[in-house]
Length: 215
Ligand SMILES: N[C@@H](CCC(=O)N[C@@H](CS)C(=O)NCC(=O)O)C(=O)O
Image 1 (cartoon, rainbow, N blue to C red):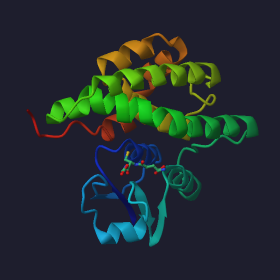
Image 2 (image 1 turned 90 degrees about the horizontal axis):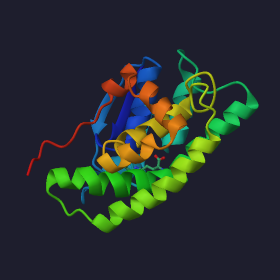
Image 3 (image 1 turned 120 degrees about the vertical axis):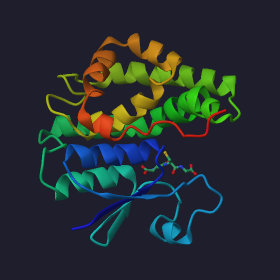
Image 4 (image 1 turned 120 degrees about the horizontal axis):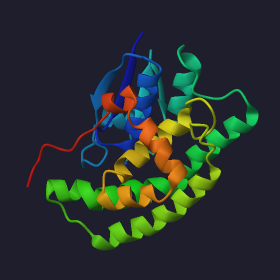
């Protein structure tokens, strides 16, 4: 059996797929692809015509789109189920994943984390306006998630689900900035959820770190 995950080490979406593979206890191979590089290999574009990451290849079956990858992994492999049986809990899980993709990714990661930490670290251009706009956008998303989540103790119910891992990867980057960490603390349910979630071994095993390039 072969599981290969193609993706960029610092990608939050790659981390979501890795968190799911870790939680399921699966061994897998990683192929590094930087989707932001000007010369993404043609072989990768043949797998993913939009040139984003990740793509999973399982015994020759290739699939892209993180939400499809994680649901596939959960259905195909044994281990702890990551999707609730209950229709309403499952709907909540799907809704939270969709909220994260549609409204959280850009402010949490591309604005707050990239302009607050990542670019600063590599000596790139940091735009204070992007950081401020990301924080304003993030407040609305956090308020919605604080109201939507069940926190019993996991975000969609009593058991860990794909929603915890999808949201958790995004919150990890957001809370890596001092501004994001301070804002998260003002949402007590989310904050308690994150304190309990981020100590799981799957988070330690998938910690992307920062690029080695120092200024
Ligand atoms: N809808 C895609 C989104 C994946 C995505 O946006 N990945 C980012 C990295 S975190 C990427 O590949 N970005 C490249 C780009 O924006 O050109 C999924 O769910 O997998």
